[in-house]
Image (cartoon, rainbow, N blue to C red; front, side, top):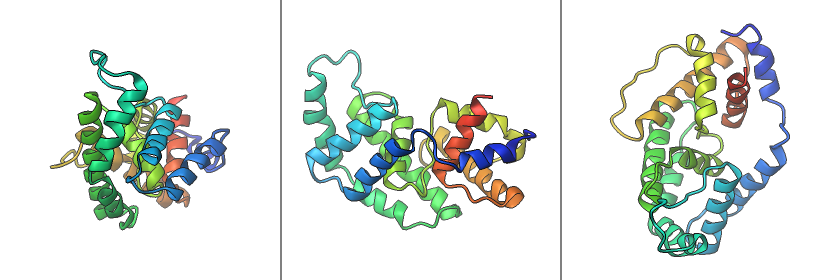
Length: 209
């Protein structure tokens, strides 16, 4: 366990320079949570994806449509047709930190990853986690390579995880399980209950060390 972990945890609980831009995205999703209007869906997918360098681009070999046409003709209609609002409702009904919440988180993320892969033909594990996080910020952990690297720095502190998931994206499932374990250990050892956004701040700080 890093000797300065307490300091990093305390810093992770403070607003970052990105706080305001994140709040804009949180307000966008809380004010327009549904997926029934093309303009709303386009705004959320585009802004979250571009802000987090995880845009839902199509396969490079697909040159049939321009970027704008791809979003209008493929992205928005596919998301509107999907059961994503039902998935989000299931996630919002769970108490974060419970095994039931973790199970639903993994399942909903898996469905969303498959949806985005069907649209783009590309692996969109990271985008799915970020998109879901802004809709249910108290539950979904943000997945990307830096967060994964940060988790490795506290491997001994987090301890072993199950490594057995019958559904969902296996890589995100293990990541989410480790994040849940880390959050509980931070509460137990240091007395801080970190929100997923604050946990992400901690992982990014750890990855930079």
